[in-house]
Image (cartoon, rainbow, N blue to C red):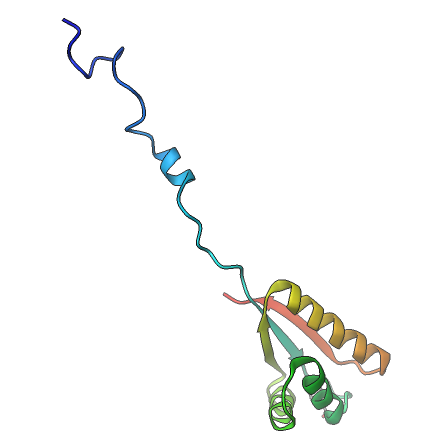
Length: 113
Ligand code: TYC
């Protein structure tokens, strides 16, 4: 008597618990990336936009001119993809530089899906 391993009083409770398994699953997710977008307007000079792209995004003159033309023709373009903190810094730098030169240039960021 009392030798059956599956009676309620003897059975341990650790072989049918999924919450422990899910709680210890390794997390390998990388942090999200953010696209920095430049928007077209009718007033900011083309040369100013080219300068912004060279100065804050490390593009050479030909690359900067090409992206500026894409924004001018299509309305916007992705000018780089960064961590949240770096993207915020780039947007702030561009917006501040444009404001100081009294140009209406707009720069925004959005999460990359
Ligand atoms: N459309 C502007 C012009 O014709 C040039 C321009 C390009 C403005 C890109 C903003 O993000 C921009 N002077």
